[in-house]
Image 1: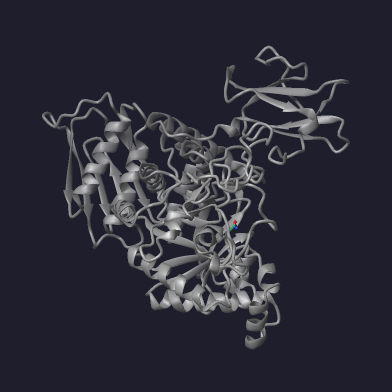
Image 2: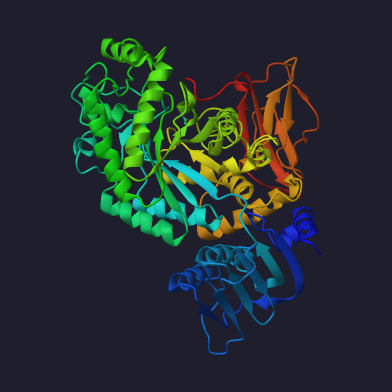
Length: 602
Ligand code: ACM
């Protein structure tokens, strides 16, 4: 059977159940028999690191806690081997037979990915793995997730867990958003005030952008930062999992934590306090002052330490959402613009970014920025990360520049994934199906090699805990992992994808990892004439029971079929999703007056 046919089968048939892999491999060839998961095996290596062997064995123990560990009556081997002569079109070939399992990889990274596939073939508490031959290779070189550690910081252990989860789904770039208006998170030895002052804000909870601001003498006690030693530990942890870390130092906007520490680098002089999530845009923001030579001394101090710390080839310098009104209103900036012949502040921003490009290059790295770095003219060597849809990425590719697609809303993992009334407060909307069906590619007439890859972004304004970060990330990151890794040999198959997603829910349960069940909640909207409610399940095979009478619907309540006229006087709608007679997901409660409102706005 050729590759295309097998991948196609895997999408759309019962093979999905036998091999519920995410991301989908290039090909899966089922064979007769199965490899018994009875603990009587020995893991042997040929050319791979001890880490791989330990990693496989410790993860198997987590998945199969009931299986006794013994090699006494070993019935077969699990052989991990690196074979540089292996077929170069595959990262690894995994052969599962009744007597043994052989993983043949091109290199250590290929072996690591093959191990993730093997682990995914082990269903929690399963008795056997079905025999098969799996051949696999990645589609994109950049398979990223971004985590915002500024708006809310995560512990070192949480970052490691995040990396473990990324690795299991074959992501290989951790874009670490380390600085923003609400906190500076990386130790810079030459600029200690960044972490003495910029890393701390007053403690507030509640809806982001509506929180009370700091009192004049209130102690800033919420926040923290990562020491350079801790960052080295994380870099090493990621490297073992074949993940490179791209640090982001967001300038010249999103810089209020810098300016709280060094107000003299602003256009107005301060003083500033780190913002705890209170009202912001257009009121208490500011930006680095490009007319002040000290700004560039500061940036060089910071970026030279960042460049020494992180071994990868890129530094992300942000560049997004700079409030340029501060430049337009500043006499020194106006003077600079006149001197340099800039016709508007966009050109001043471009001039600023080109200076940053030189600093980054002088420190041996390459510049990446968000798509606003196109404004006023793109720096010659810049890579563009497209977040405002795909337009910025396409514009950059037209200039022959490298591009990473991480567009909002499809790849913004901080957005609602179900009805705003039910979900924790945030904004926008990206349901799993939106993320899954999104096509991140460049138009067909463009050079596809300019698209380095894709990335999902987890902004943490509304994500105060790591447990909630997991809820927001998964399952949508499954869809991004698959788009990033799997060859596009077949049409997307949403129902088959959902089956695999549900198999991974069981895996997450076994690992006590959090995720969202929102696929079981229906989308709830009003009909065009506003007289009826339209209930649309996200996945097939659910029965949605409902009531307008404010009681808890169970399987005895009516099943929704078609638009539901709103009874006179009704104020609430409740729904409960069932499958095969069993409740699944949660009961939803919608205030009819709020059906079309975003909960976040107070
Ligand atoms: C962004 O979302 N401001 C990159």
